[in-house]
Structure formats: structure tokens, C-alpha cells
Image 1 (cartoon, one colour):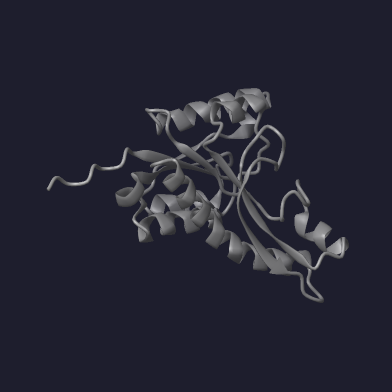
Image 2 (spheres, helix red, strand yellow):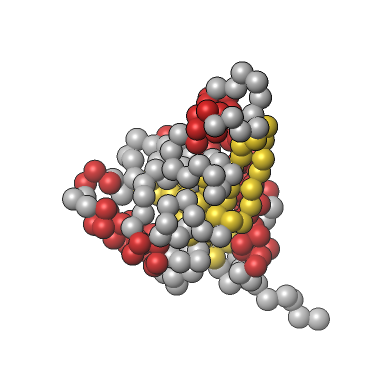
Length: 206
């Protein structure tokens, strides 16, 4: 009996701007769930737009390649996005990478989104389509919502829209502040983002 064919390699390039806690959850899930063996998927690089992003040191400690594309060094969003796409391409020779936004605090241009269409994922700390944009936890509390949560979605040119892949719901408790609610939502983000990525890999035949 011949051995089962090995999955075609699928690089994951994770983009961060800060501590990268979702990035850490994804890396740990990839290791624990053997994504390379099961899907051909591996974390090829962690890229940040901020040289001082703490997540870079964590990734380097895990032996992962890292890179910095400092948005302050470019005169326009278009120029930055072009440089970012070139950085991704260095870790994605076959143009198959799944690009994962994990606390990446930049609004991407339509041209960048089109280039990676269908393989560009984001997580947003609200139950989309409610509360796109910033300050989601404060807005949910001020609106009197009983529930909040997080959403993993495919990225489109419209900010915080696109097909929803996974959501998690958490209650808003009496006395909650934006900080306490954010902490409760973040624990769910760490669960649903790896789950959504693995489902994407499975559905893509990776």
C-alpha cells in the first residue's frame, strides 16, 4: 500500500503590531495540532509594521523568521503596502500563503487586499457587523448591549467587513469596563482564531 500523498506546503505569514497574543495562540495551535503534517501549513514568518513590537521577540524565541516593514518609513499607504507585499513574497515563493492579521493596526489599501483576496484573514473584537472600527468594547457598553464578542473574517476592501468564518459571544457583565470586557473577549479570540484558520486550511485542501 502506497503512503498517502503529502499536503502541498501552505505558508502562513502573520502580521502584528504589538505583543501578538493571537499570533502566539496560532503558533501554539499549529504545533499542538500538527498543521504541517495534516495540512502542509507552517508559520513561515511574523512581520510587524513596528520595530518595537514585543511579539517579534517572542517569535524569534520560537525560532520563527521575522521582518519589520516600518510604516513610518513610507510616504503613503500605497507605498507601505507595496513594501509589505514584497516582504510577504520573500516567504511565499509560490504565492500560496495565508496572510493572517493578528493585531495588525493598519488599514490596508484595496490593491493589497485584492492581491491576497480569499487568503487574507482578520480578527475583530466585536460581533460584526456590529461595531466595526475602533473602541468596540466601550461602544458596546455604552450602547447597553448584553453581549459582545469577536469575529474572524475574510478581509475585503471595506473595513471590518467580509465573509464571517467564526464568532464567539461573551456576556457584558454589570460593572464591566472596556478593559475588563476586552480581557474576557481576548480569551475567546485565542480559541476561535486558530480554529478558523484550520477550517480555512481544510476547506482550501491545504
